[in-house]
Amino acid sequence: MHDNLGMTMGMFIHDEVPTDEVERREKAVSALADSVRDLVDATIRTTVADDELAAVRAEVDGLVARLRTAQLPGPAGVRYNSEGRSWNWGNAVVGRGNAVAPPVDIVHDGFGSAYAEMTLGAAYEGPPGMVHGGVSALMLDQIMGETASGFRRLTMTGTLTLRYRRPLPLGPVRMEARIAHEEGRKITVEAQIGVRGEDAAVEATGLFLIPSWAPLAETEQGWSRSAEG
Ligand SMILES: CCCCCCCC(=O)SCCNC(=O)CCNC(=O)[C@H](O)C(C)(C)COP(=O)(O)OP(=O)(O)OC[C@H]1O[C@@H](n2cnc3c(N)ncnc32)[C@H](O)[C@@H]1OP(=O)(O)O
Image (cartoon, rainbow, N blue to C red; front, side, top):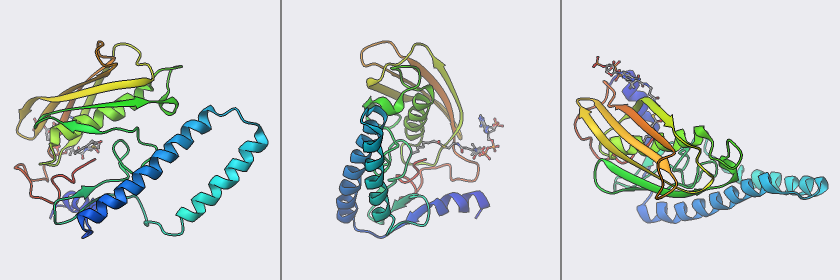
């Protein structure tokens, strides 16, 4: 096995947790992440007095200590069971347990096409009242990578080109991606993000590569659906 392949395959952890248990846990982890995301928003926007901030901080530190009583040794990685269920709760965009991730649910409407709608709040601000350009890039990279991969082959972002055409206000946004061209190991994906029904705020073109050390054909279960950045 090539070193890189070994490294990448090593990031996908075969974890024989039954699917119903994964789903139960995912709901619980997701609910906690939603509350923590709310905490982040409240922290940014609060105007309570300094002594109240200090008191809240002490309580938050207590909660962190409780969660740390049982922890993974490192990042969450991508896990899968032999029933074909995979979960990547730490992913920076779609990780169900990641309160830093924007709350993104990507819908794949057939191979090579995907969209997502979400509401971005104060935690994703760049220019005043606007979505941070890096956040747009992050979300576009994820939807474009998933579109290129279709969860049936391993793809990695090679080059991502973005054109910021107009500021994107915080609030409800929509993004879309589709495969524009494919040749051997190179998959070109086009995407955009903007306010639904309006002209795109950011347009993106990306070249996604099936690494030379990865199989070119559809890959077997196990690292197909689990090949999530
Ligand atoms: C479900 C999935 C969701 C995923 C969402 C998240 C996506 C991500 O964030 S992925 C993480 C960010 N990307 C990375 O970390 C990738 C880092 N780069 C690499 O690992 C390697 O450079 C990799 C795999 C892209 C290419 O390596 P390798 O397969 O060995 O390519 P290599 O043999 O050098 O080149 C193959 C061809 O691609 C071209 N190429 C290589 N790298 C690039 C690049 N970065 N941009 C454009 N073209 C490139 C080469 O010129 C060559 O072209 P040709 O065949 O015409 O001569």
